Amino acid sequence: MPTHSAGRFRRFLLGSVTSKVLHDANCPVLMSVHREQAPSVVPNHISTIVCGVDAEPEFPRLLHWAQDFAKLTGARVKAVHAVPAADPTSDSPGETRICEYVFRLAREAFAKYSVGAGISPDIELAGGQPATVIREAALVEKADLIVIGRGHTESGLGRLRTHAYDIIRHAPCSVVSV
Image (tube, rainbow, N blue to C red; front, side, top):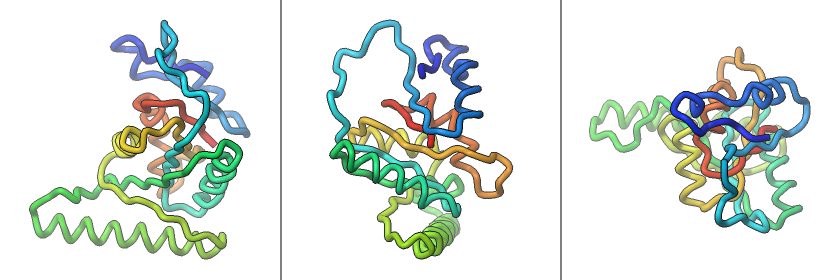
């Protein structure tokens, strides 16, 4: 489904139909930015997938979906988690300790949910807003596809899910919301 991000105002919105489908669908939804002209280079296959994960009990299901899709396409998966409160580039000792603490909490949460799912993923942690972190990871990895979760915005740790629209709007490639 295309999103509408062409004009100054439109780039802040998803198309109303796309938004409704994304909100209501019980299946994965593929989205890409609507363009007036086709891109000059269209990949004929998917070689790299960036999977934006959050430290919630549902993350193994999302990662399994990305890995299963990667097997079908011969792609590799890079799992990324954004920690909005952390600034790993800070020179402040206090901020550095907070960053280390928040990263440790995220690692512990991922370890807990991974053990329950019988997986041991390698998840890159990065400080910053989810849309920015995932966009930068996709650019660095030269990703052909981004996979994100979606669901209940009222969940306490649902930062990635509440940032789904931002991630989609700023993505340099197509996004599948599972």
